[in-house]
Length: 575
Image (cartoon, rainbow, N blue to C red):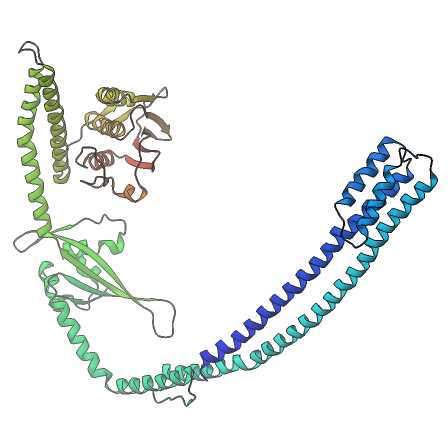
């Protein structure tokens, strides 16, 4: 029989018995609970009512208070009739109690009332005794059957405890001993276990593995040499520079591309410490800088190759293995891999130049269109009818939007090319904020959006490019207005913390979904489904400009409740 079948049958039987024992116990406990509940609910309450009526009878039944007490207990007794003849006794008691007012001094009537109460108490006491005997029999039966079931479960569990662990552990011990022998390179070791179960299959698989290991051991040297040559050929045929180092930073391989761009020969560098080679080779020194300066910026390397300036992305790949029989990884060396990204850089440069040229060429005619639209609205040229005035306003709005887009594109190209120059000066934070709010007043008023400003007193100076920073705040306020609901509030606040000053812009619009928050500062990214105009460049440019001035920008948004942008800049002393 297979081990799995044994486990299923043994544990299944034990589970069935445990379930049976639990169900049986629950049934008997439920019966005992019902019997006890009947005694307490029915008979004990009737005895308690009769006792209260006797106390009222003995405590001057002529008084209205005692009569009311007696009548209340009688009413409860009338609703708790559970035994034969109890109804008749209760009705007699009720009739006799009704004669108290007409026969207050009749002693025979008092005796009759006591007799009626005694009958009710006797009936319920007899019922309590009878039901107690039934509950006792139920408890005895429950104890008997639970004891029998528990004994049976114990016997089966004890049998499984004696037989099942050894049936599993003994073959495992044999297999473990043989594996240890194999790990000691005793590949002639075999397991002799012929039972038709899982361990028998494992033994046969182990013997097959041992046989193959024995064959492999006899021919491993030739195969290892072939594999070594294959790997060397593969590395040399890779069209990207690759350099391999061992755990002590010695060069163990270098392909032809790497040798060419480093202006070395493989025979001159193999087996030598890479630190020694870096002394006389600037490129190698640049390649191994991350081993000794982990915080160095990961920027593309500019290398003169293929008769031109080329760009490479560097990746250092650590090589680690877990030796056989151990649990901790062992570092065997590193591989320096350079990926040629020159074609992508050239395309990016061409794209940047194209955008810059197009944006620059478009800026002048767009400005002319905007000026012409403004002149059309001037009454000195001639009055316009309402339709013409609406068209002129539409032209001016579109021209303004196009002018903003071209400005953003020009800023992007300047940032990408490194030609954007900042001109920092000491500025008052409130001046920057007021300028941004002034620019957006008209847009806010058109949608009845209130711009709420919170400015503390005694703000320190900031050393920033005034025009660029005002543009950033204006862009944030414009976005807040654009994505706010009509008749809502946009809050602009300034807070000083330690050596930094925070500019906070908060709206109460739709907010940004959590899975888009980490993308909103990417260039050209716009939240899917958004109908608001824009290029997706404003936040990207703002982030780069703020970081170029030593600051940072963060966003916090609660989807459905609004968005808050926080710009942090270092402060400058007022002295």
